[in-house]
Structure formats: structure tokens, C-alpha cells
Length: 278
Image (cartoon, rainbow, N blue to C red; front, side):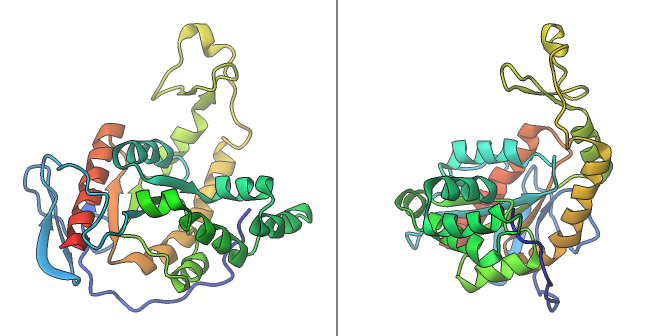
């Protein structure tokens, strides 16, 4: 478990006008419809970078020879897992989930893993500096250096964002999948899993076949009360995280189909790659 934020800093307003693949939100955004494309403005380059209706071949290695670096965030049940799989398949990035990384480091008995285990065994939260050490170690691995990375759901707080910022860990694009809370609740409460095959179904959005419906189970934390608690924690921290990545931020409308969401993600990643390479 990663430590909850002790504090978050207040950031001065950014001069960025940022692109959004969604209906207008309360945050400042601007989009220009040209077919399915949108334009993005950043102070890094005076040029306007347009995401074409048909995205070009993925630009994984940038002009400076650096691999592509992507962060993705979203509330529980926003669809990050599905989209991460699609991103990895399309771009060949190394998927890094801090939860998975934490368990792997502990199991492998690494220096950072042993530090984390000592806190976990005592029922304490793992300090941010230990988690950052794990992330740094992972980002330094040969395959990550060569293929680029997709950091999934981390940082989760302003404090964590500040910690990795100090270590020079910064994305080329920060994807934020937005879905209204009530739809998220519906997605969570209706979710069921098949203990035999591991397949995940939804009673409304992905109904199970009749012959397996009777054996499906619901996760103990897939209740409305627990889902709302997780959403409260997410909303309490997401703005502080976003504040660190105003220049890289692209907001994605997560209420659409999986393929439509991925089309926006692909356009955003391709546009970010071209902007950095320019």
C-alpha cells in the first residue's frame, strides 16, 4: 500500500491551453473539430500539432533518441486496464503498475522490496521514498530504456508527483480518463467475475452467457459504499497530480466505447510524440 499524501502544494495558474477529447469540463480547455482531429497548443513549440483523423504509424522513439513516456490516470472503473492493454499492444511500451511492482519487488527480495516489506509486515503504509526507489529501478531496466514506459495510476497524489518530479521522472503525455461518478458506480456494482475462467463480466454492459451466470462472483469491494469511498479518495488527490502535468495533460472522454476511447488516446500519444520530436 502506498502512503497517502500528507500535503499538496498550490500551483500558480499555468499559461497552457490544453487539448481535451471530451465534452467541456470545469477545467479550462480548448478543442477544434476537424473531422475527428483536435489541435493542441503548448509553449514548447509555436506550431499547432494536429491529431489527424487517421492516426499515423506510432512514433515510439523520438527525435532525441528517447523512448516514449506515458502516464495514464483515471478513477476506479474508468477503464484504465483495458486501455493500458491496448496502448502496450500498439506501442510496445513497458506497462508499470506500482501495485504490481511493489508485490514483485517484495517477492524478489530487492533492497527496496525488503524496505517495503518491513512496513507492510507492521501494517504501516509504504513511504513514498521507497516507492519512488522502486519506480526508478524499474525505469532503469534495459527493456524500459529501449521500449519506453506506461506508468499506470501513479502518481496518485501531489506529494507523490513532487517526489518523482525531483527525480526527473516526467511523461511526454499525461492521459486522464474522465467518467461521471454515477456511471463509475454502475460499472463497479454490476461487475462480476467467473472463478473458473477468470473472465470479467458486467450484468448490464457485458452480460455473461446463461451457462456461466450462476457461478459468477462479486468482489467484496465492488459495493456502492466502498466504490464511493474510493472515488472520494481519487477526487481528493487528482487535481494536485494534474497540476504537475498541465503541459502534458490530455483529458479523455471515458464514457464512449472502448474503441472510441482508444482512438482518442492513440491520437493524443501520436500528437505528443510529434510535438516532442519537432
